[in-house]
Image (cartoon, rainbow, N blue to C red; front, side):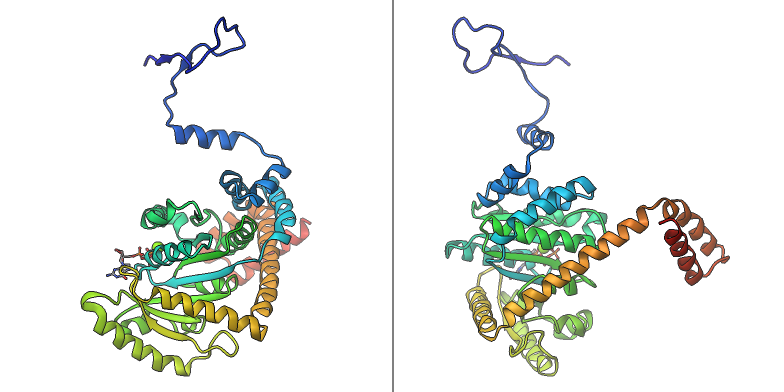
Length: 367
Ligand SMILES: Nc1nc2c(ncn2[C@@H]2O[C@H](COP(=O)(O)OP(=O)(O)OP(=O)(O)O)[C@@H](O)[C@H]2O)c(=O)[nH]1
Ligand SMILES: [Mg+2]
């Protein structure tokens, strides 16, 4: 294929060899070229720190890429960045939103987000979905579902980091929250799909946790484990619009009863139950009023600070666990021994307890 040759837009008269006099058009799109340039360019620590503090989106995104990377040298850089930006972090309201797939979390974040931007807030939206590493589905979904928000200059959306265990994803998200705060985002929303362990993890990194449900209390109660309800500072029944209003109000009444018997995750705070429609915007203002009330209440009682301090311990534990797992699974004896041990278990020649002990002994012996 012949490449198109173009002249540059401007060349001084009598230009010598030091000037470009012809351009060969690339087959890559502008975005692809930009992505490659960002990837190629190595930034120094000072650039990155200043970039984050000045909310330079490219440098902010690049810093998050270092945080999310599984490479040791990148992680080292990420740790240095974090150390520098930590004094500028913390000044935000951290909100976790969870609910079954399709409950309307992203739609709600878009409606609430636009409302908050109008009020002058700066919003960062992060998603936690370890399953996306397998399905790859939600990443695209989140971007397309929050289209209006994605176009706003005071909003930063970052899809779930790929690769690794839930623990790894959690550590990465926790640290991403901090750099977003240092960049000036004062509301951080973390969206997570309500399937399994994710909610418990998100609870350990936010101030306020919202559980989003839809009408049909009977089924919902079965699908949502009691444990998840115990994490919520508010339960909102979404899609309370059109034909669904009556059913939603019924579900609200049912949950209002259920909640009486379930302890609240926050001292001196009774979990709120209400309805909303992310589609029409009905109830979104009330939701924000509830969040504001929660924040001012917990700041008064000291619970806000107390929770944040405890979360620093959760972060420390995340780091230790990730380090230990990494050391173990990347050690030569485990890389070499694990497949053999697995095959012995499959053949019934070794019990899991014996296998684990054997591998751990090998690992300890190799140190
Ligand atoms: N009628 C109605 N539909 C809604 C409302 N909120 C969301 N939806 C619709 O429900 C569907 C799922 O919405 P999402 O916002 O993608 O739901 P989600 O909880 O983020 O879904 P996952 O990220 O896949 O777990 C979309 O078709 C939305 O248009 C609402 O308040 N009313
Ligand atoms: Mg979503």
